[in-house]
Image (cartoon, rainbow, N blue to C red; front, side, top):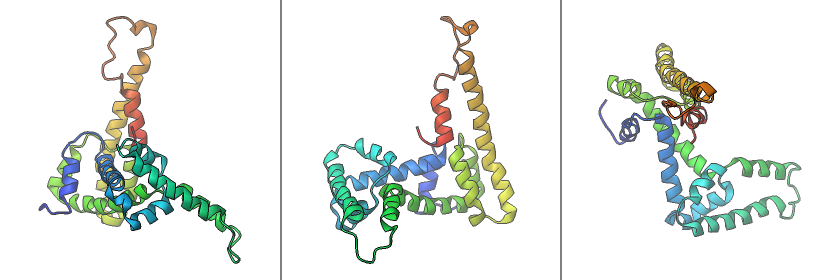
Length: 227
């Protein structure tokens, strides 16, 4: 498949062949969005209106806290809290529906500016991902990936009918299923070995932990898509 401005980001995501490629795709979008919002964009009126309204989820608050510019985050929090107070506790309008405040509260708790941008970007990147799957070269790149994590295996399975023909679906499901099933077997082996190492017969200075020492962390990442 000929490289284009649309396919280059997917090719770059597939090149490392380490971990889950869809996780890398999401991480790339998150990193760019967090850096964008913590930079000069923080002072753009249109952006601030959106961050005031949507706020941020716990995951992306943690990522923003790791950035150097804490003042940017404080300023966004200041106006987000102000907007939240206005939405929930300002004087009730005459014809406001009875459950409007409850609906607004749910929207505030469930929304995130970074999530909305990442979802927008993922939709477009995954569309290209499925288009690239049609080519032999791209299928080879996907086949060489270490694994596809459980949440993103589910995501790809749910999106496949939108982009692939009925004739292609079974092959695609088996194709990505092999990558996920292989990782489950590997993690089960390593976690089981970790558990067995606590048997008194396996203790001592010559105890062989093999690849099991970080198996708990790797299993959690595979199951949740997050470190």
